[in-house]
Image (cartoon, rainbow, N blue to C red; front, side, top):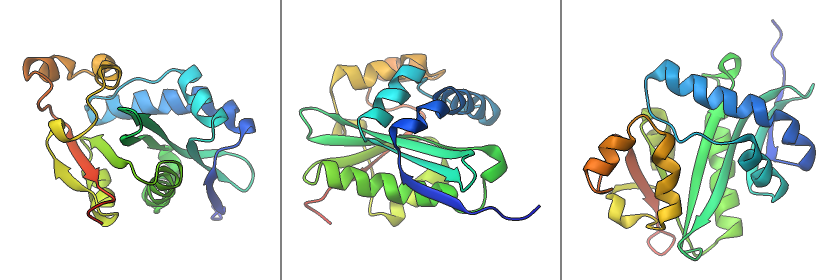
Length: 181
């Protein structure tokens, strides 16, 4: 199979056609890894795309390859890098890292003074975050807005989070503080 060029860019309105594929892959990937995930709706993915708060990767022929988005919390004091997913056929060739870098740059563009955070159970994401200047932190050091934590309700580990009074869970919280970097 000939390698096809992959383009990692800001999402455009036409990319909403990938919404169902994105949420389906997020869920099946989490199940395959046996890890928790906050389920997203197609409507929420479409909203991020329409608002210019998403990064998409596509082949030069228009096939969906990957996705991630940002969301602001606590009166824009924090911004999350969320929903990073890559199509299984395009994994292990650096696409996730390219998307992660672009979503981080988008976070810094939209919210230059906000602290950027990511909550993940994936070692690969932790390594990418570290390269970008993120550090592991406690849950108390990231967004506290109840709506953020409500998004964890669909995760298989939500009971763990609740039993720990939202102080910790199986995911690792990582933070980039622009005042320290």
